[in-house]
Image (tube, rainbow, N blue to C red; front, side):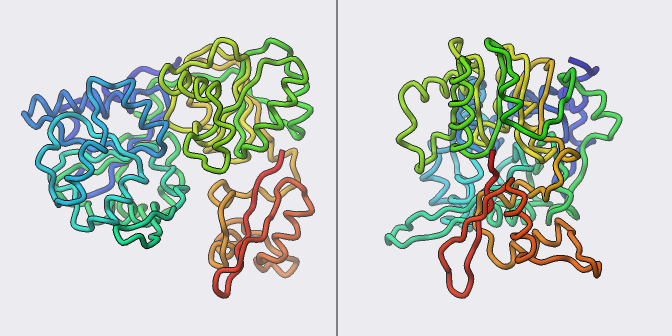
Length: 416
């Protein structure tokens, strides 16, 4: 580990009102292992008690697994939001929210705000959005209201609007991330305030990575892994995790894969044994001892940490921010990190936020603008040409969805 300071060293209780503002969205950029979560939960709790403002801290994270990990690892400081659910739904300001740090997910906050549009943060002193970069990729979902009618909950839109509306009020609104790039490209950009300077960020503690190796053929790379090697592999789709796991087992490796407990599509694959592997990873921060290589996807790609010794990570993503986030799951210095090297691929690289979701006309237009691919006349190429080139390169699959009104969506998924 390198560095000189923890987040708590630079953002002391005395420094909070100096370094942060209630008028802006305070972005704490710091690498994994620098103590962001410890500061947000333990240090702020002590600060609140000194001020005789027990509690009044809301901590929002991106996944259910992250929430469960926080509740388990900081059980002396945290409280689960569901215990306050009814009061929050029925009142603008709950009266009993003064015990500890209340933990909820982005999805839970979106549901709360949908059913109680008068709910605000004015009774709180700190509202912390953990893994704020992940808000951009939060998918919407459908639930039933009190009358049994289907209601679509658009997480990103609802939560983003609430953040901006809450600036200038009572609490400090804080976003924490190791990869803030997309925050500064979003609607938040005019409202952000960087808490740490570049020099301060560089001085924070962080884990090191010995060597980086780029590859162009993941199958060939998997075949090179010596039997008995300890490691972690990241890929996005469950079917790809299965393929990797089968290949590794055929080579004699002790390999397993885990995915989100919320996955309805793959619920039948959540065996008792797989649930035990997940419990060990989430609650005990370990890879189970009988497993040499664990394969994970985005359900465990942010927030969570583990400290079981590994020799390598293979992160099958072309997106630099994704690689940085997944690398951050390991609380230790890493010997070797393998990744798909763009320079070895003459391909179109699709940003993660456009993968595994329905893309309608406006989404395809934004994708074309972001890719900035041009034809011989120096004009941006559009979706028909982009989709043709994507299919030709055989890195991604494109599936056509069911027509909705006058529009038919397409879904891009990454192959192995």
